[in-house]
Image 1 (cartoon, one colour):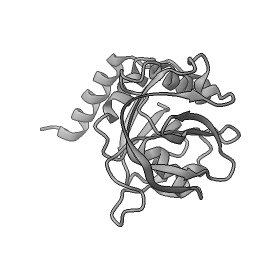
Image 2 (cartoon, rainbow, N blue to C red):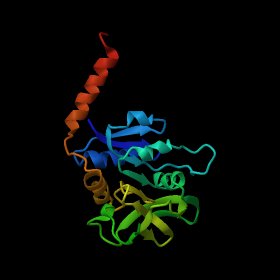
Image 3 (tube, rainbow, N blue to C red):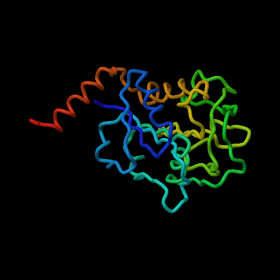
Length: 213
């Protein structure tokens, strides 16, 4: 079954992303960063790059094959994933002028389908020391906060989006709507999954693993 793939860079909120998507009746699966791109090709309707505690310019930072951006599906980067997207696509990430942790007000800039029916000035949850300082080619700023000039960026032509905040947590008051916009409007995912399907999948995996034992 086609699904939304979540690449986990070590965020404590990764499973919240999956839960938000599954509550839309859309299947979401979490993968480690070493997932082979061939295992995603033709099987995903969209990709989300999660947050994480590291810096993209650290020697041992977690990365992802840049080929992921050539799969022809929408990609959303969250926090570290936002920075990594900018880094891999030719932008620049540097230590922020101010470390943001906690609530912030999001000022929307222009129009983006990602923020459709999201109130300008809504509260978002920030947790970062680094920041995107230069946009990759093809991207535009679509959201700012007081201390972060590139809080949200978008390449609407390729359906690539990045947000510095965490839309998956309840402190981002309209974050669920943003994820809904990404999954249903941008990825056009089918709402054909139920939690009962998860039980069936787990049972089948157990049968395969234990065989006749």
